[in-house]
Length: 491
Image 1 (spheres, helix red, strand yellow):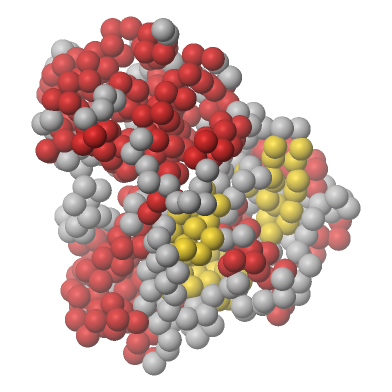
Image 2 (tube, one colour):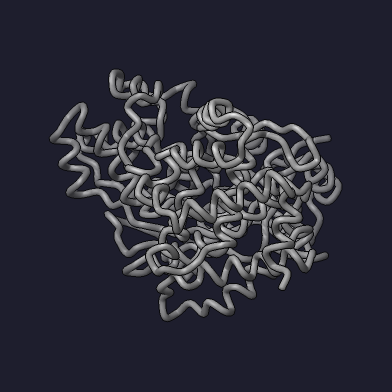
């Protein structure tokens, strides 16, 4: 079947929305590092609407830091792809035209550095996941023993990592006398702006302290919070979209109607009229970030590990079961006591909306997808919440079970005996800890609690934390996730 492209747009059915702006007039004002599905369903949606509003400055050059997959999907389509927004039986499809090109960084690292130093570029956005920052999750220090980090420190002319690309691009901008950039992290990491700033400065200082000082003084790294559920696109999705469009779209993404983007009011220069596009600009992102991480992401991770162990494939299947729904509600009750929400956030309404979003069966959001990279996500999604409960002197039975679910997941075997690959950058480490601990559940739980990249030592040594977590891990080993959840929420 013929592919979606600028030449085939006129073949699309009349109910398919498409960009009402002249793509030939679009300037590339944004470089995005990590052009995966989430970016295409979130930030690219916002920038596409900025272009449609009559502001041509915000086209996007996407960059993949590893795989050519997205480039191979989008380049034959002239950067076009379908955004499928699904809610129940409704599926609104819009063609996104904001992507002006896609680079594969390893194929031409100096070319990507040069694009970061183009005069039209004003913003850099990132979705490289927690592990892409190459920072220790607990300390925030640069992982200097990481092979790619070591290579970037020794050879700055051929970057491999996102922070090193930014350091090199900003150095070239300074050399050329160009304006500084605003770098906007769109990953779910607490203090994400500070983290990417610290990583970039670490690389810059290693090569040129004067450039590091210029970056620190002139560039902006605002804190942000992003929220939109974006499940992985499946082969079935591609076939259904081809039938809907009448042309093949290899780059389509699917999502929910809800979209939230909160950005700290800290910019180095030009930006879109974000407020008119529904983006919240605020003096403090932290309260919004905490609510999202501890309610939405915390519950997602809990359902991913506990539900995955119980053989539940999708989030909507879990919350359709009254037992699991009660567990999510009780988990939120624990987490809510640790929040200091902004006045504009009605937490009760937010929780109702979250539950409705989880129940959206048209998304088919896989628990296995959410379970990826858990060692990078757990500290901010569940461990920080548990630490706050300990500090308050309050019990944490539901949080403890969720954390124990992640521990149990590290064995790579569900409650029915099915084997799976633990997709995590620390999978080899957790496997080694479990093997050394032997079969005793308490020993295995204690071994994983020694992992300082996930559990701060002071917290791991606190009986108010480790005792309920170890007990919950034992229940999961002996009874399985489904029975453990049921026992916890049954009066």
